Length: 176
Image (cartoon, rainbow, N blue to C red; front, top):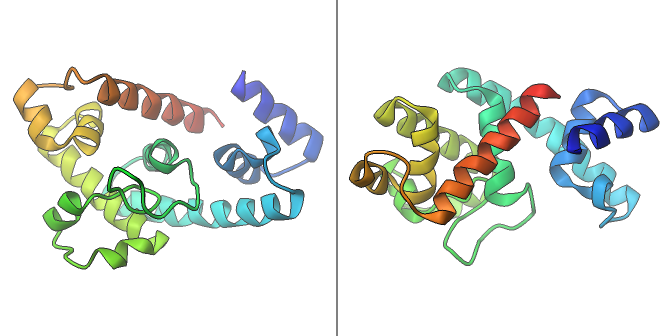
């Protein structure tokens, strides 16, 4: 259904695939929650982030669609900087993950660029540890200790749903 809506938006609005992807990510066109001018500025922002994410992904050896999917599930590309669960920025980096990467000043993570770079590095680290991107996603969500303890995706409803959602977004981005 979502792909059909993306195709219709692309045809009706004659937007580039990157802009359609950006519109999908921000949900501003699909749900009409913001006015057109605001939507247009968000689309430009996400399209520019896409090229940055692609560059980071290439450097980290990760499919850019996986990073974009992680951001989509973590923050929905919202302007939210701090979550009630302690996550910061688009990739919702926790203080524990930041410290594992040698970041002590969490204010750096308020920059979207630094945040996505840090989240990509952390995801890369989880992929190196576990050798499987599904386990890496579970570790990104529940922590590496939980994945080690359960020797797989932990039986936490939130983590299992998280991995499924990221996979869904990943497949969506790969098909656009």
